[in-house]
Image (cartoon, rainbow, N blue to C red):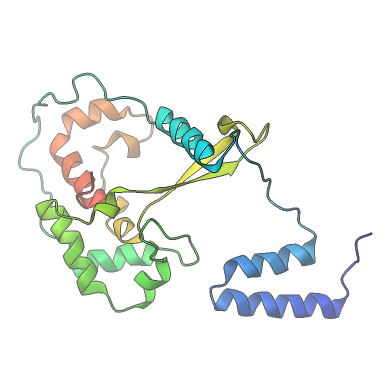
Length: 221
């Protein structure tokens, strides 16, 4: 039989969870909150396989199949339709990095490099990060780990022994996300224009798109 928490228990739990959140111990904070509210645990499961290695292979094959194959004609040269557009294709600036940092939320999971967003937000590393981003943007030189991401399978409904019943979340390096400046895109990009297909806009506005992609990906593959 579940015990209904009294006011003292609730007050103590609130204080404890607040201290945990302020110390960035988010997992422990949610554990306390879930205990107070009686919230059910997240669904758990394990995909089919007789060993950890076999299950890793199952996950690898599943997510690899979702990525698809290279499109026909991917290497073809696309003619440029628009010239001399007012596009800033120079190095990233300190103000651009500051705007990007402002959009980064603390408490999120780190990417393959293990660097949490709190480091980007609270440590004085702007000059170093700016150098790394500009090496990637201007010279296509970046750490190999920037081209990787951690895929976290999140359970959905259904049989959790089947990989199809999981939704994959991709975690990239926080420093790579700092190069994402979505507000710099215009109506030339179909993905940002309501009711417009992206392929036509990509062809007609290819110079603008190329720079937008560079500024979003900071030279990552």
